[in-house]
Image (cartoon, rainbow, N blue to C red; front, side, top):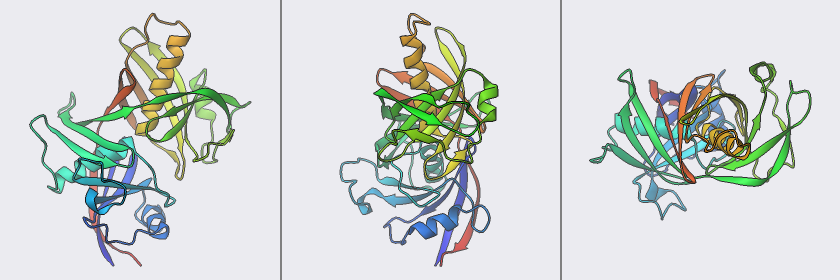
Length: 290
């Protein structure tokens, strides 16, 4: 089977994308793993199929025409990907599958609901994409996370952004740099559906803006250069901690999250959040799927 694929990334979080309107391609775990393999395949953190929402079971409630059928590098299905949805928006626009509405926005169906993506430009004039991520929730109980490079297990706050996250805060960037995230961190208790795990270090925080440095281990993938939903989870966890600690009368709603692949901007509005950042398409090619 010949497949036309495109490689794209958002702050270094990279994806293989292809169009399959009727979801006719048998997208097995083995095929996803081959596409994502960096040695014998194309190489990516995940694979995204562009399918019509009407062709994907369980998407009857979405108002979007196109659905982001997202798979992790190991073939497992994921509910949502904050970097992936921006890259997917860029792909749909470049492939002329959608056109922005009067407000410069498009709608995308995901397993975490319909996401609205506004297309704009950053200070350099490059494309920038702002995604309405929807509601987030913060758990009541702390889990313990162990990782290679940490001296002792650290408490983690559970944050759900349409997919599950555990956020750990560290005191210094030297602690962050010592982590060996090629080895999956261990959690106690283990989340039923697994979780992405964010390790964060707070930076400057004032009344308007907070800063965070972050590394992440994604379930089904490993360490990635960036994680969009993880950036939202980290920012909302840090905002929650800053409020509880009484560091400020009111913790800021806007957060700059610095990841190895660049910088993302997270803005809270009550119990919902938006994520802003770049998206780039790198190349297209024809590949043969066995």
